[in-house]
Image: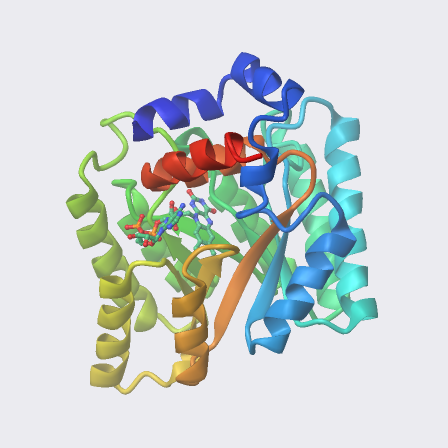
Length: 302
Ligand SMILES: Cc1cc2nc3c(=O)[nH]c(=O)nc-3n(C[C@H](O)[C@H](O)[C@H](O)COP(=O)(O)OP(=O)(O)OC[C@H]3O[C@@H](n4cnc5c(N)ncnc54)[C@H](O)[C@@H]3O)c2cc1C
């Protein structure tokens, strides 16, 4: 089921069909704050009210023209201004294919450099999501280059990739903050662990490397066993809670988000918004096949 959903996430025909008939719109609102920046800022404000920080994510990936990439960069720059104007506590996250990586790496580099410079001027921070493994190397090269001029930038690393141990080591060496995730894409067995238990073991190992690593890294998971392991490891090594943070997705495990915040840990919520929600939504379904039942119930509700 997971593989089928991830396969459909990349199929344009199915996406057009789903969007045309509005099949998933109501269900998507569980994971997506809304279609506009104002919807997302309201969600950040609500999160801040629960003592949670935000990360705004303008949905969109694999832009097809330099103009679309420039438009996305402009909208993300506007989100950075809006965070200041609304006086909410939030960072932003971007995808490099949204900024033109699949068209020309130089375009993505230029767009990210501009955004990181803008964030720096606003005393804010830009996270770079990690996408399909075809882009891992170029994403890390671009982030490393931009980080030299604008240190307020960090990158996601996926525990399911064989290469990630090497990548974590490199990011720690450069002092680049890492958001550690399990990985959400359909990858061939040549590059990624096939079994969940292998990914979880890799996550544990990389998480320990990061906690000892120096920069303020993010443990991005809803997996309670891994969160408990992170807390136990930090305690055993005397790593203070302000040396790391937890990150979770909008709409997932709100109880756990609140509990960690109540215990005094820094928790940041990744808040997606925009009209291009289809692939993001399909990845959320794939993570938990039980979600498909939730969709079906929503589709047939009056
Ligand atoms: C802040 C953040 C940013 C991310 N950025 C990226 C990125 O840049 N690149 C990338 O490849 N991936 C990214 N991901 C997604 C990540 O790779 C995983 O696919 C996702 O977090 C699910 O894995 P898990 O660690 O929660 O563990 P799992 O073992 O999958 O889940 C643990 C528990 O969390 C709950 N849960 C998890 N997912 C769902 C869901 N969809 N619906 C309902 N409950 C759920 C369930 O209770 C489940 O038992 C990000 C995740 C987070 C939290």
